Image 1: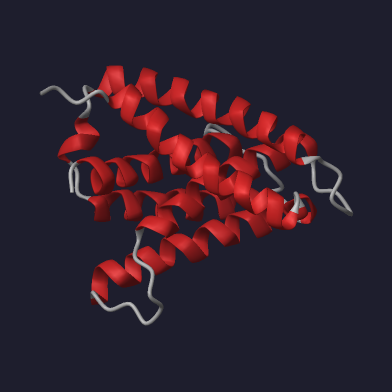
Image 2: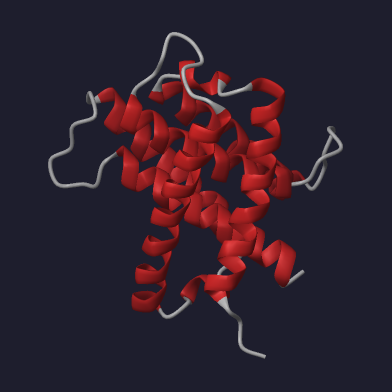
Length: 181
């Protein structure tokens, strides 16, 4: 049976969105106060934990890498929302508005994945999950450099493109975990 990447991507994003929606009910859009470097650091914490778990094989907290990849997807989308709207001094977005923004950015990530997946011929399926982790960490280092340069680049993609790639690598990791066991 041929893998249906687009369908698996959409199912995976739906699971991430479900958790995002539940957290919106619990906390509202409290994340609206985060500045971009703080979002980047939240993603870093999640990616670093994945790498530690992959390296040591030991989890002291009873959660595996799956919830961390979900966190990377959701914080990546939060980052894209923050880039578009800027940080707020208080929660200024309703859960409905936040979910609409989530959907817009998830759709952009899907469209980017489709274009790259076409060009790269689903090469990601032959990669190891640990490579996605390393690539996310590399993108985080790039993002921190760009942030340190005031968001300016000479020839490279910006923070938004790096967030999109992190989202997509995390979705690939989740697809491998959920669909390929």
